[in-house]
Length: 137
Image (cartoon, rainbow, N blue to C red; front, top):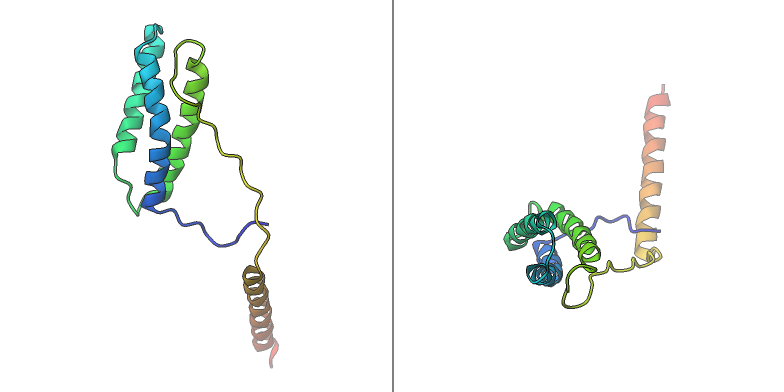
């Protein structure tokens, strides 16, 4: 069972994510710069890397932190794709980027269960009171 509380993404979370991904993108760029790739592939990588650098260098904001975190996840997928695509053709220094294995959801805590029980009880009482006021002559 997952938590019913919302996840808050802060600018620090976004910055940490960018900082984790940046060395992998830079390693690919170093590999591409010394390889003999065709012009189309080199240009495609260059466009992607320029987009990444622009995104990575931008300071995260509180207003867009969740959207920026989602964008960083998409960049991560693209970096993994580029590593797999280019590995046979050019040397990519360093380890390959892998997505972390998702953890099994933690069981609901007693606090969460208590809050859910109180919420359900409150809804039942509110429903009973509203029905009582409607049915009353």
